[in-house]
Length: 459
Image 1 (spheres, rainbow, N blue to C red):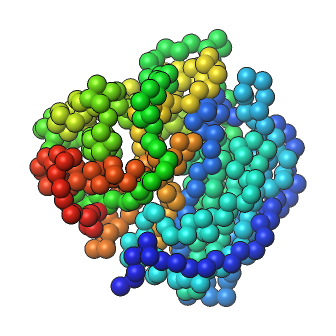
Image 2 (image 1 turned 60 degrees about the vertical axis):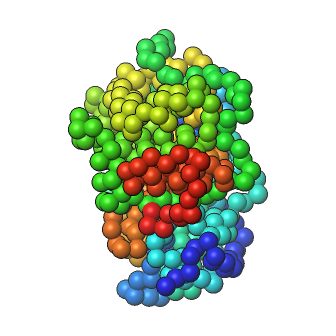
């Protein structure tokens, strides 16, 4: 049995970071981002990590060399990634396609894939060594838009870790780029899906007109210091398989039984997390649900579009309502919010960005969830097969750590398919969260004062 990942310590030897440039000359031009791309809430770098097993058929092939060459060829098609972000009048972002390249790091680690444990899931040990933060590289403007590290493992497997300037792409857009690298690494001359820029499709109208209610951008004063504190934070992952999902479904009334797994888990998370943070009963709590709007346009956004194609609609309820009312209350609010997103909503958000100066979504008493179970990270194949784990490197990422979580496809020790959910909370709140979640899964209410020695091991 592999040791628990939290106890795993290993050494990573890194080469000096290098800049990978497109393998052929590319245009030097300026490309405007969309008015969805350049909002304040996307101006940060997001980490992704992929684990790959040793493949005997690739014996003698060096993943670092294969991937390095494939990136250079892929950047010919995705040449804006090799540029640098600039800011124009009224905070408008654009890419100067300079061809300067993306940051690339070659590394070796004295550890095998098996040492990471039977169920690969965040938090991963030594993440800062597997995705090295090159000094000066985290600036949103005038810095490399991608940082990639490929780390060889002692077993012959490897780890592909990447950090993306989020203004450039969302999860589907990033997977499209990574898949293109994979195809070219496996011998293709060009990606099967060619990249489409077309960022003007998500620009504000002229004149802009905000036609929908966007409470996700409410200006809320943090009068009680309720933004999650950054010290003494606990990072833990929870696995929801068939039995856990079934237990939660048993708690909702018949008319909500056809809800999606995303809606069910989001309602559960919102309720348990609110109780764990112990806000005043009258305080408004917000659950931001990432909704992909690509297919909500008529016609849909073009295949190959790799910009940000989602919005941040928010459900709002008081802490008292969430704590005291049944799970179905939160679930109905989540469903209403998801249904509210259509083409007009997307256009209204773009208009709001221009009218209000590209604001950040409200983080006060807010939590954000993003479902990447269908994004395709695990399908990315550089020649060594599909990833043993592929997806976000950790929870709680963003400008305000602890405010966001991802739903990531995973398997547990039994081999059951499910969803792993990384959560970051203050340590004391994490203890309460675990108790509340246990109570919900056992179909019983547990007050935050109840003492329990329960530790989630099956989750």
